[in-house]
Length: 399
Image 1 (cartoon, rainbow, N blue to C red):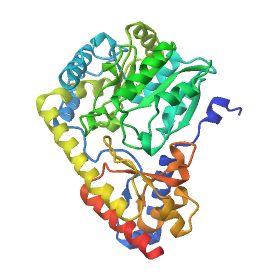
Image 2: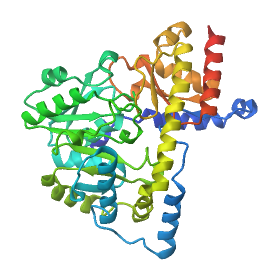
Image 3: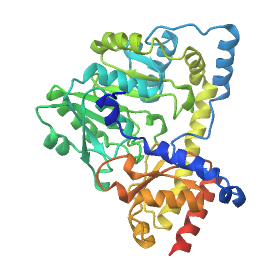
Image 4: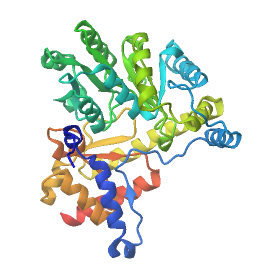
């Protein structure tokens, strides 16, 4: 069978490969006799489930048979509530007509790329960045152009880099703030300068803002929508709203993009999950919002617990994350001490010896990724403590 070049060019999502390897380790006799539990810090998934009111709304929709197709752009009531959330949380006035509900942020990114990218168009992106973002660009015929970033720039693009790498084939930029894998955000003045330059060039700015609700520093917790109505903002119910498996997200687009996105959504997805949409209505109840803020404080506390422990064992986090729930750690010193080639080998050492699954750097970029590991800090404080104890002991035993 002939496989399309599009499919052949898509790289594995190595975090998921680690997840499969973890399952194999769990099936081994050594693991079963250890009495230990596998600690999964490789996938960015909150240990919190959907809020109680959200779960109740989903069950109510099922019981009442409210499960038919919705409009391709989503329930009008849900779009109104998201608009109000932007107003209450970020002081932004977003017309609900510009909000498109999608089958997760992944569908939003796919729709944006299909609507805006022609074959051969280049999209500038930071290196490191979330691996699936560049795959969306590539699958739509575009060319993801990863630009190396530094700790000094918070692992984010600068205006000078965008200017330097802009070419006749450049269509725009795809930024993430806060970022996966680093948990760092773009300074507001830098973000504004990049958006202004991109618009001056007639390009597009796609802003991955799925962790925006999980910002811990007032300096950075601002949406790119506050800068320009031409920004395409991608968001999700997965992270801040703790609805990962419900596969529900949204995008905010310029008015001129609503109709093309709607046509694509009609044909590719029909509509987002009806049950998930009715459930998500309850995300914006005062009781639910108070719970999400409480959980946000807990995520911050977990960051404050785990990052110093990593630094202490030589897995230094060069830029403290200001959002999301990740720690991007430089493992080069530990790899050198243990005689390992890089983060891929170290990840399997952690998996096989300490029963801790982590995300190797090769997932997230092209340059120096052997020197970095991504840790998810979305697990409970108890699990993070246990993981740190195991890793520290394993590293100490090997030295």
